[in-house]
Length: 207
Image (cartoon, rainbow, N blue to C red):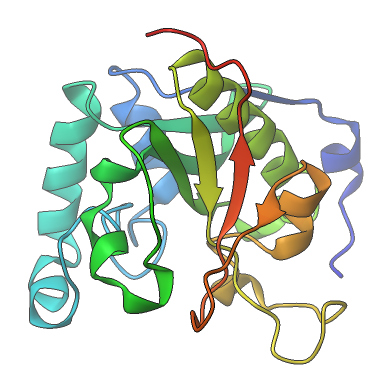
């Protein structure tokens, strides 16, 4: 596990929901690579992968996500160390992420008020600093306040046992321990090769 630098240990992490005027923050955080390989947080928002994904990577994804952010249609949470953006979590109604439904390994029954937390992006200097935990807490709060009935997550399944470290490049949907710590239950349908975790809100807020 990477060690935290002294400045990171001493800096308080704050979080808040994404605002429609946050595009400059997103650009700064995601950098020229769009967080990862030109994704710009569009992986789950496109209806399918393959050729369409290859065509959209980079500039097209950036334009699409900018439009969603500035119009207030993109859901998510940001983490900051002081004024510096240090993390992102994509969360919103499951219907916002059509690729979930086309991914056989993640098919499950869901309802209109089912929300999903689909990815995290944390720059390498800020990993293992509690940023993901802070973002997930904010995502849970946002989903509940927005009237969600339940919040789903799709962590990567360790192939060599539950205590195995997963390289950050493959852990962008989160790891099981993160969600278990926040009382998500494993509800993976029989036969699925990807896990599904769910947190149910007993008294979701009205929209």
